[in-house]
Length: 168
Image (cartoon, rainbow, N blue to C red):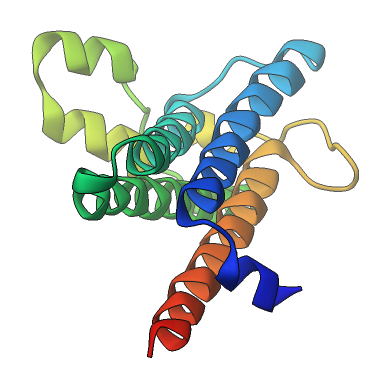
């Protein structure tokens, strides 16, 4: 199965990664709606990570001359989203470690140009981000996001390493 992944057309594989990322955002929005959850700053940051990753992979698939740059954009989205999901999953297990408030929200920080507060709210979070949420198949939504980031990250790394090995 992995050999087929390495031999598959690069554009098709990148498109599949993009669709997985966009599908993850859609699923998060749907589950938030079904469970009547308000997305905290860290949840929004994870969605932005998926959107950035999906956009980077989609652009890499659609525009081969800029693939290196746009793939790196996708990797940056995966790393940022993974960091936020890992931190929020940790806060859910250790709510006493949460301090302060997320503040006014990511959208407000972007509007006023306070990027330091934007990244702090998205990556560090606050008390709102450590509140227990309903379980879906035994996990909370941030834990599902972390699992999705891990899966796509590991498959992506395997694909990159396999392509390099196949090119030799």
